[in-house]
Image (cartoon, rainbow, N blue to C red; front, side):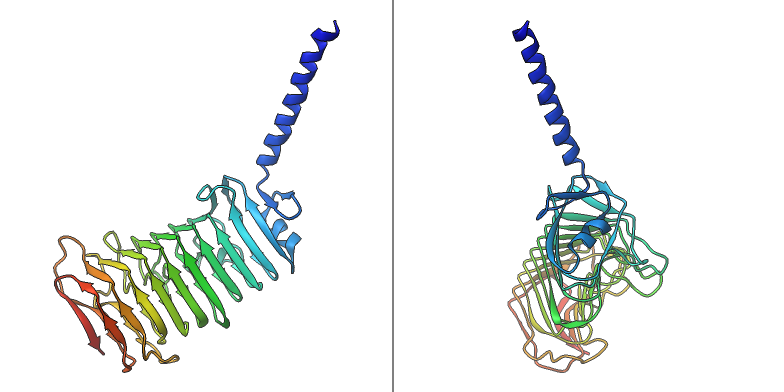
Amino acid sequence: MFKKLHFPLISLAVAIIATAANARQTVPYTVAETGKGFAHLQEAVDAIGSGTGTIRFASMRFADCAVQQAGNITYVAAVPGKSVLEGVACEGKAALVLRGKSARIKGLVFANIRVPDKNGAGIRLEQGDLAISQSWFRDSEQGILAGNDTKAKVTIDKSTFTRLGTCEADCAHSVYIGDYGAVTVTRSRFEAGRGGHYVKSRSARITVMNSSFDDTGGRATNYMIDLPAGAVGRIADNWFVQGRNKENYSAFIAVSAEDKWHPSAGLVVENNNARFASGVSRTSTFVADWSGEQLRIAGNDLGPGLKRFDRR
């Protein structure tokens, strides 16, 4: 009798352990340092507070958002691309509103963010450093919208920006960064914009490298890269294709079109490949400059109809 009862008891114990493990896996958010799970993102953010911590996202869709007021927080998907913040904006701004010391985003998807003022973003950055990798921003009014913080920096790596931007009110863009100390974009893809610019930055220093700007499926878009207040830095080894449906097709890259807050002398634009989409026949300028300063433009492979440089 003892042996007959032994195996069912073992099976029951295994089943209980498995059920407990599955329950843990379905906890939406877990603070990695403590192992504590939370049902709402704001609760996890508040648990870290002014400290430093990592929030791990389960593989699921979240109708959720949060505001980071302080601290240094990493937001990371358990499986890159499987954690989606969708359709909800905090403070009428974004899925993540960031005004702490720093934030890191790894492997998250931000989708379908819209707000009444037509500025709904995946991320609204109000201050502090921001580092993004392996993330996807799609089908929203704006991907990333940042204010001013001249002592901080923004870095974007291995990320994709799809069907973003609108000019229904004031124009929103795939990425818009205010007067930050530095902005770096590497190994990222911008595609099928829905208005505005793909990358607009008022930062003093810009780096855009090894990225692609595919405007073939864009609608009512403007510049690929807009540096409206001037900048120094490097735009190199990128691939640009301008599509047919443009609000403004006069240039691919614009320098100091609105202000001259920052010097642009020595800005390097080199070794890029730029052309029009198949079947598009027009003339445009690769780099249009309003700064009047000496830029370094060299080694770019430009398609038919595309002028190297234009002083405006």
